[in-house]
Amino acid sequence: MHFNAYGGNGAALAAALVNAAEFTPRAIEPLLTEHEMLRTTLTAAQAAELAEWARLLAPVFGERDLDNQVKLINSLLDISATKPFVTNHDGLPPHLHFSSTDGDIVSRTKDTTAGGLAMAVSFSDGRRLGRCGRPGCSTVYVDTSRNGRRRFCSLACANRVNVAAHRARAS
Image (tube, rainbow, N blue to C red; front, side, top):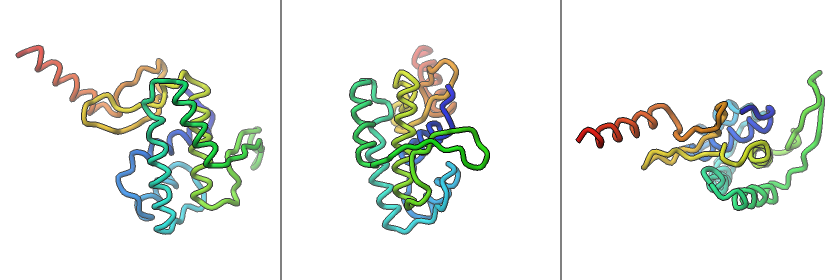
């Protein structure tokens, strides 16, 4: 599934924040840069604020009740206080921005992730925001596969489940 650049980027950034193991400027700044955020320098307090934001993002992934998932995303949008706008900067065709480039990195990250999750759930049945199906793995992901049937965060987790099932059948 293809989301527009901001929806996909925002949803992918949300998943990356939820999956982050450490919330220090040194750990989070490269993650923000990788997901095309600008001016990613963080203080320790801002990194801690993003850790709390990631905790709020987490329940959206893997939620199978669409009404509840929409409610969770709307509460994130309320917190982020985002005001989307259309722009055509740098010769690009018109596209949606979820945050002002003038905001601080925490505000822009909140706006981008909340907006990205809203786009992801709006352009899918809500099941594209998943949580790994392997017992013991809590990794979340955005399912961009063609058929939307992804169940695991990685091939390694899928293989572990399949090998365990094979061994259970063989014994």
